[in-house]
Length: 376
Image (cartoon, rainbow, N blue to C red; front, side):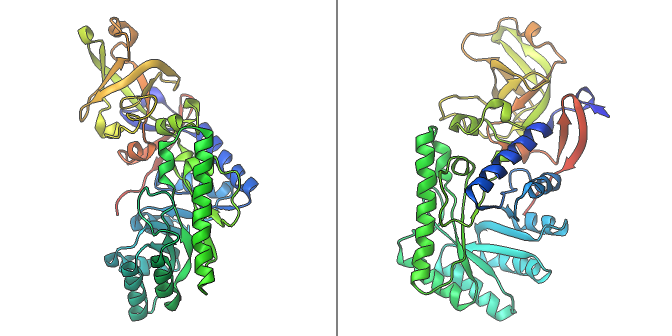
């Protein structure tokens, strides 16, 4: 069995014990709230991890690209929600999946998108299942739950036999950090999406699916009346942004980057490592939060955080490790050349995307290499 010390660096490591604990935490919570759980696999894009989520009780998956949908479907997962607004040129790709037997759901948030879907369905004899995306927090895309546009979109889709329900994502929850605020956002997400479904039903349309979710709201919702399914993704790894939001601790973070100290700038208190932004990504998601971790929290090879030490800056293939506050004047002794470190990421989705594969680890043992999907 391979040891961590035998790996080339940088390498993306998945702590399997932490990952399984995170999967169990979310699934148990969804079971307690009596809703189906459809994990968002865009964070990991990894078949063994998706299978672990399904084995724990997940019903279907959520993807962010049709390429992901194709790859997971080819691996035997058939119940898939493509949770990005449908662009007309992609309808052929989506239709091909459906015609092969994939139970693919797509989304729309405008009359134009709905009409394109309806026209393609009519002209090509394909049955789409469509959820209308609802804006419940002003964060990104979606139609307002009280708008007339909602009914217009619903009418176009219903006439095409394609309307299946509504969905939303409370991305604004990432900017919160207290239980009270997160609970309030979870209820706002739930109530506004349920309201949109109610309005469609009052207009005479069927609306069986009410899908909500983000990791912070899923872990803080007090009740989910009227919701049929929840989606969340980053919970499987967690990250430093989620740590600052308050939904995990550092010892819950399952993804880290293994790196090697390759040099020093002793007069500056720096250690140089072989993981730069090509390994960690350029995501600085903690910069505006209560605790700025630079490009990541520095840990020893056992993934125990070294308090105060962060990846302070990054070039393409070089990372600069420094101690925040008082400079470490003995960095050459603290972190000698050849030292193996693990860096916890700000944003697990972005860091994971830098690697073609994960090393699944338990302690200092590498259990397996898990390929990662990519592309559009």
